[in-house]
Length: 179
Length: 179
DNA sequence: GCGCCTCTGGATAGATCGCTCTAGTGAGAG
DNA sequence: CTCTCACTAGAGCGATCTATCCAGAGGCGC
Figure 1 (spheres, helix red, strand yellow):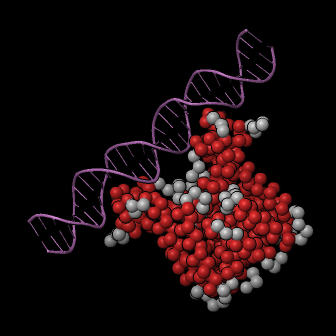
Figure 2 (cartoon, rainbow over the protein chains, first blue to last red; figure 1 turned 90 degrees about the horizontal axis):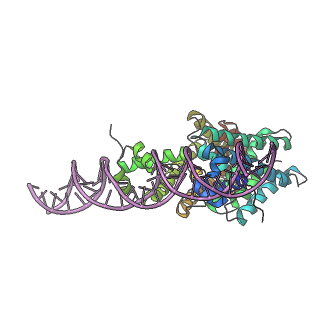
Figure 3 (cartoon, rainbow over the protein chains, first blue to last red; figure 1 turned 45 degrees about the vertical axis):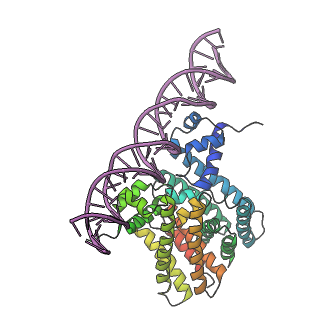
């Protein structure tokens, strides 16, 4: 049972904790405990402290989530089917994980938008990247891409709070309308 | 210069701090400082501590925001104009307040969804109420109401992170499409 | 063998967290 | 007047936060 390198374990554990507790709600003690890593290693691999760790987790999670969504998107034939399958897949994941495993960026993005400029820029980069790849796939329709992304992110907020997939499917229907 | 009662000042100050720092990011020391209230008064008025304060702030902010949005909505003649004016108004407010004054519930909702059941229920009640009044105004079309709400909430996330009103207008366009 | 360097392991500092406690104040009832 | 009680005022508790510090383990070149 080879464990992944310590640095990766810390990144992975932090990403998971961020999703359910947010940035300020996640303590570094909890991180190293979950990662089964010694405390000293954290500051060896991330000398910039919590902020650097946060920024790296945001970028890594953003890239991971983008790949995940694109894999679902590209598995379908038509644009409408592709967009719909992303929302349907998100709804299924939410239900399976008891509404924990949602968008890994949104929570942190809202928390840090007005308090930490470094982390805000990291979230902005992620959203810009997502907008880019989705715009490409929608025939350069950037406005539509932003609209769909907003519907997806907002549906995460509502579905997690209400513990229901209904908002996710409703948002999906709105996103595919007129495609 | 009559000050509002201490209890109201605490609620108001907490609401403002929640919007920009979230729930876990807001300390009670900061709250009483901003409210110009003594620390002891906080636990006199909110014996349930931070959780009770949080729940009351969520409900009060939810009701306030609902009234605000409905005032904008009902000032327009057609459904399409009403929905659009909500998104346009949100975009203007974001720009005027340097992207601080967004939805007062979303940040807290994501933070507490998986960590604090009492607060999660408070956010769920607020979203349920919003969905109800919007469904009424859309000819009982609950699905459309949820979709529009998701687009609005998600646009707050994107606009704050990107520091741009573009996502808000894009989401607005998606929301009025087909009305 | 020895020296070098990356990484581990954890104690600990200093600040801040939510919260409790008690003393003091002031308006209204009798 | 006195008594009562809602409220003010803030010191301080134990716990937890981020961050620093140093000692040691293990691999690698020489």
